[in-house]
Length: 546
Image (cartoon, rainbow, N blue to C red; front, side, top):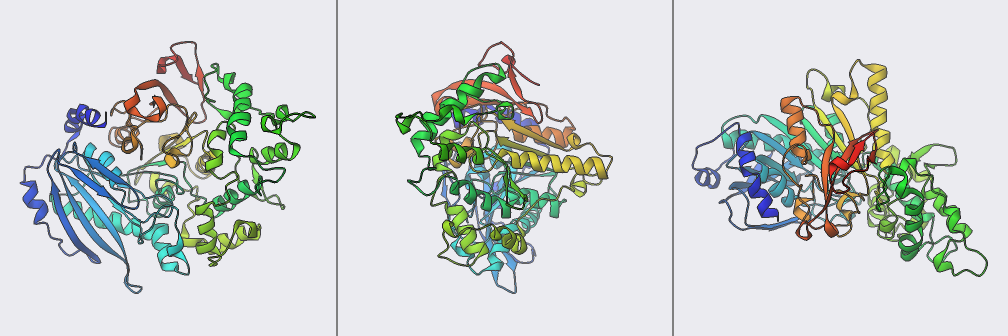
């Protein structure tokens, strides 16, 4: 399926090519030598002919394909701090049929590894020169042990390695093709999952000249509060075996069906998908156990109290706002997410290695004072919360930002995306004469979990629309035109000044394209919601954004 889709939009890519090049690319690649890029060392340059086997695995991702266009893979070592003798490993992939565009893709969680899957299927397969970095360390997504007592490594992870790799990559592109790039883009999602989106918003706020267009999914930009919220969500139902504990079968077989019973049809169609949970006033009390009832089929009063906390904004005792709520609809993924999970590898490693410098710290030691401590330290300067995007979006730069979030996100509250969008919107109204929709649009995706943190079960809904970790996990967009592919939509917005309205996403049966198309539906621009209009349930025409 993936190969046929790539072949199908080959002519589309060629039509976008603005910088045709007629060099002997294999010779140019394997004889490539850097010309005076301070702090950048070339490790290797290897040429891959069109449709040759590309089989590469890193700690971040892998690619095993034989249907890619021809490209040159350039491997680099970039100095991030000469005094500390620190470096990051970076790759730049350079397609023969280059469109003049540059695409940066991120890592996920604490992963230290180049995102080769997205360099292949988002960058070179669509004519972009692509760059990705290990952010200065080698590790899996869930392991942050490398950060213990190493502020320099944390800064590399937080922003420095990516920014320096972007700068180096742009110069590599210029030297390889003999001309400057035309436009620069970023695409990524989250930070506790597949793609380090805190980087993208950090870049927009701190280095507004790096990108012309940025696509972010469910950003973890409020990093210091996010990890506190994650622990707090889990502690609402812990310890295991306590009166308030909710096990996996209760989430999936008791709570989720009741959520659907109360809320599913509010958007006009009872189909197992809550299109906008903001209109759902879920009442868990309807599940209260009666005397003598089997507790496997109902909820105790402590469990109901826990649910009220989970579905509410999180405030500390002094009424300081910390983070948004979970929304009804993502319960089937909770047991593997943050609710009731004692291991919480991301949060544990955050507090152990980034905040307390105590490798033995456990979540039962959590207390609210750690929020203030994390804010004071701001590890890696990773927070990206400034609402002032004028340097990126103003007349001198005219940058564009597309953001998306799944309503059933079980790792980062969808409210976080809304909170950031509204803070930018309010700032632009009060401080500028700019219109937010002219440069920043947020899309909410019904039924989608925290993107592909759970690759086998990323939610029941139309959730494939050309973003990161989709094609590489069997979920390519239905088409690579701007109506179905968010990257093409961004390109058209930046280069042709045609702003996207809705996107059409596809649900593949069992979340695998090889199983066929289940349905195609629009993704609405916030604050609109998707409503059924009585038409074909499998077609975008059957739904309206209202």
